Length: 327
Ligand code: KG4
Ligand code: ZN
Image (cartoon, rainbow, N blue to C red; front, top):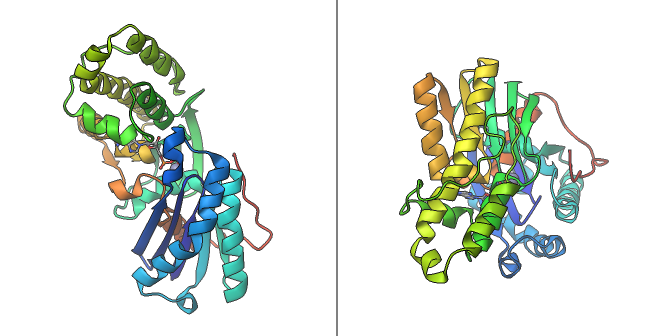
């Protein structure tokens, strides 16, 4: 089965071709227009998707060596995400489907982050998924494909949002997650104890207090001190975020007795989070998986693999399908 998948839920325009079990291409056009605003500007994101979607899809087909007539289905992110951005992908896909008489598959972006783990691995069900991205932070029990139960989620900022907002406070460019990760490797994670909200309580998360705490902490320091200890502060922030994520993941495992855990979403690229997951999994005798770095942040390959699983279950949409901004 050959599937062309399109992702446009936020600020990356992406197209991917999957053939059988293999991803043949995964083209990602990232939008640099948001950098100077320190965050995604929805209207600019939709405009940029409009400008790049055709060439992104053409490139994905070309790299895969697949033509439109070879396709069996087209898949698209249906939501959640920014409505204007989603509309660009959904309308484009409907046009392609209509013109080429192809069935459509509407994919849930959050499911797709989880199933990104299946591009290169075969995690066993049931599993616990920790999805950590710029827009979401949630723990899910996945009993079998598409049988998901949300066990906990963030009450305010998402983990990626916390990295990005704290990065802004520290004068780092948007998105700051990857930069904080890089600097953390040269810093001391025990340099400063930042708060870990709700650590001893349930499976929900809260990261807005951490951001405020970093803001107050930096306001009390001189510029020289902040420059000298940038890596230490980054490492301490990474520790505060990853420890609370792992603590909740471990609690979810204890509560459910599930033996497999998967990470997903942009923040699952974080090296400290991965190291701590590995340590916890080894200590508890669990199997753990995380997607290849290129499949952690938003990409259409994860939409393609999820679409394949949906097609196998006959879960097709039609031309009436509409995007949804939130679940
Ligand atoms: O999944 P994603 O591409 O988009 C959403 O669906 O939100 O996640 C983007 C988020 C950003 O907040 C970015 O800073 C964060 O993932 N991120 C990281 C790393 N790489 C990306 N955060 C921490 N460490 C990283 N290595
Ligand atoms: Zn995402």
